[in-house]
Length: 464
Image (tube, rainbow, N blue to C red; front, side, top):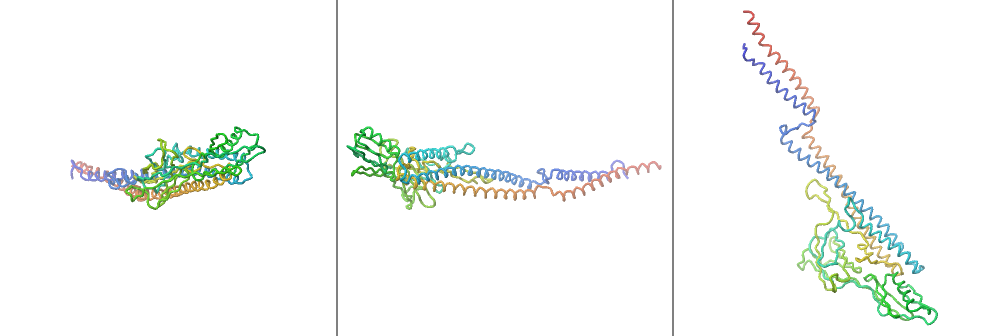
């Protein structure tokens, strides 16, 4: 028996300290809910769980990004729905005024309404925004540059590969022109000067000046400019293209002219032009607006000016377009880099719908039966373009909805995996804690017993 060193008490104290440490760790797990609270608990598990936590937060944000994308698409689609309603009304007016029961004044009243409706389409195009970012004015569409001032690519589908595209302007669009048509004032009674089916009544009491005023007033309503020299007329449509025409007659004299569309010659990609047009590319024109369609959904809409802004004729001018992978709206819909959905919002304006040219001149006019018929055809094209744009937006929205669902499932699965690594199994840990507290109590009791052993030596000494 020894006095200086109580080995039994030291052993009990060592075990008690171990039990206290284990109880403390168990309490930490139970109180925090995590079985990894510091790197020492499980360094590999901590590293894995940190990566998973980063991924979960990124996936959550990507899901919110996708929901923002849905809001953007819904905003644009709502605006296009209003544009569609306006186009339906304009077409209705075209059908109404194609009926020959209406006078020029009646049709002019309808044209005034159409002008206001076209202004509203342009207003919607320029003011539709989401969080200050314009959607329908072309600022959120493919970036395209031209080496010739005035040549504008108004639209390029997402299927147009980036690269260089070249073509030659062989002919600029021209208006319809009637030159040096001579009309006569009746010596008695009245006579009819008919322009595009609209009768202008001239009487013997009219002077050249008053007759000219009647002609100018009627032609102005039909978007025709007039130059008068005595009784000789020069008539020019304000818009260009093969849809523009002037038919004028009086008595046995008549003249008829139509405008011409812009014409291009495309450079083929087998001519060493990177990203050039294929041999299957087709060109169609409506005045100064030219549409190029190629394989795989390739579509470009160009505005070719009637004259060269730099001076001179545009005929035989070589044009180079550069199409870039930029300009459209990119939505970060994934947790990692470059997981982006690119959304192209085409410009939807009177210009891109071929209702007005680049100078703001109307391409539709219902002040004649012919013009009303052309308006119906033009509105069919415009409605088809808006429908195509809305279909593309609908595809974006459906994809974003699926993206949100997919991201939410990914968050659930990754969270479940991380939970298995770092979360405490409360039932198992409580069982462990109960065992450890019993051991701690036993160790405390044994330490007390070991501390009492020296008393036996005192009893031995007292018996001397």
